[in-house]
Image (tube, rainbow, N blue to C red):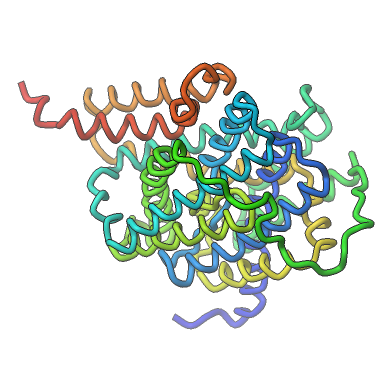
Length: 435
């Protein structure tokens, strides 16, 4: 099928929108990590630079050589939970925050090693039988529930040390959310296609006009710098993180499957993938975990929210996505540019991301509803959701009296809920219902 006459303009606009989506997805979580580990402005700025670089590199590698779909690789919500838990457990054990971050680098390398082995030895596709529509749907639903809290806090302006809602930023955030959602549902032609780009642009302008932003101290930023290698120091390998790394690797296989299913469904109208795609996706997810660890950033995973972006905008081509990934790599070498782009107001960025999660949660519910919801499936879902979501509401500190490995597992509602769905569905077979 030939491209439209304005294909160059269309490609440029689609690339710009993918670029803004990649930025919006990458901007918020380094700030969260900075607050958890008490990083200063320079350290957060360095983490932001490395995050942009790693997001661009890993997205390009997966899009070109891994699963080969336009799926953004971004900081993982699962790893954010692990970072938060290990920050508390490390402090309890008398470790400094930097020592904990060095242990986390090692944990990411262990996890990446397991994922690489799963892919190279073609083991990843052999566990596909456990990733039924019920499991992938439950994973997507739990993922949206887990991250919706993070995005909503960002929209309300209650991140970091701010504990009360700021009405001005919150009003602009909800305006952005409604604009993105409204354009994606009721917009026609290019208005629908560029809903995210238009929403963030309009939200940013309104935010600057009504609220303004506090100036950042960027005087000591050089015009050009290379993202720092092992900024947190060398990885510190500890045996007690290996079980966590293995379980995380297995859960991330469900992340790969859910993302590939979601995006292929958005592009082709039905879930379409091969065993080779899953194995390659696992192999390169292992490689990208290594890249994330060596550049001292949060481990990246395929973000299923990419399907929400595709559904919102109708953009299904891979080329603009690859161009946008390379743009992320390029800007990471120019700190003033990183500082400017990271000036997208947090409430606006979080609002646009939450709008994409509307589509993602809908896809999760569609997966769940694609099979008959009999008593067995409803019981599995209800038990998993009640325990998994319930754990998300518990403060991390309540697990401090437990062994480290138990803390890391039990404090992660997404991990616990997904594991429960998998185990209950495998142990409670449908044939047992006949009576």
